[in-house]
Length: 355
Image (cartoon, rainbow, N blue to C red; front, side):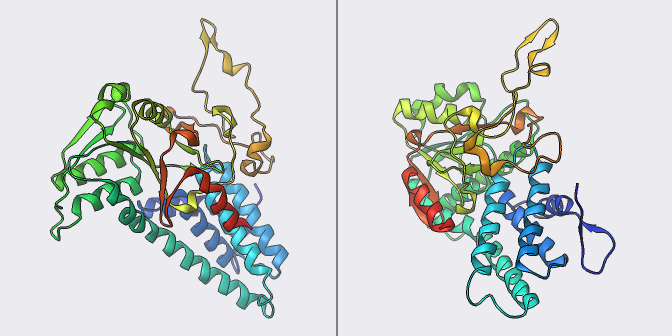
């Protein structure tokens, strides 16, 4: 792997370890924002004297990051957004003169963007809490921090002591055998709601259909919101959305706009990652060990990184890391810091960002 040298030092700047350190130091940090912060630190600590060198540096750091994790979809939303920010700013007429000053200005503005992205969660909670009314029963899954923030905001609304006047219940879908970070975050969300006197029930994924007639609406987070208004989220989200649609229950996605990603999947096999969820086996072992299909598709061109290693896309090694794709026709609305969007509006938002 190509190394990127720090200014005035012999050791290379390790963007991967920096990224993981940022996520471990701040549990509230999302993957896209963590990736942007790591790129900003790389830009600040690595010498580059021209626009071309700067863009090449960020491109190499981005490729290293994407190669380092099994599922780079969420991370790609942040890295692509930061690259577009650099390109648009470096092409402005004002971007002339001393390049060190220009780069310092870009780094400062990048850090300001990160702070705004972090603050987006509270703005989303302010929009989303109005969807929850007295007597509602909310169904959700996973440990989405932005969904947790929305539910806590609804629990605290109209009351200054942390125990609000809106009374509602929450059903959390929890995988009994999973010990993933996602489940530990859902445990924290459940404890926070119960502390605010919100009754919370936990059910296994197999009980979603059984309890759907008790549910008023569903809220889920997303790893990425794709171009057609669908979402990529933890495995089981598609099942919940399908059942909610069949039962006539609203299904809302809660997501920051920095998770909007340039990806246009048509189905579960178009995500650009190989997950091996369906693993056919015989007495001789797994078929996937001998017949591994190459994942190559035009729709995931932006997800692919340099093929310097044996694989250009990640392979999810743990079942709890698996994701699925939920198409837009199953989604009632997407709650973002910019307001509540219909799935069809996602492409317009991406056009505003990129063009």
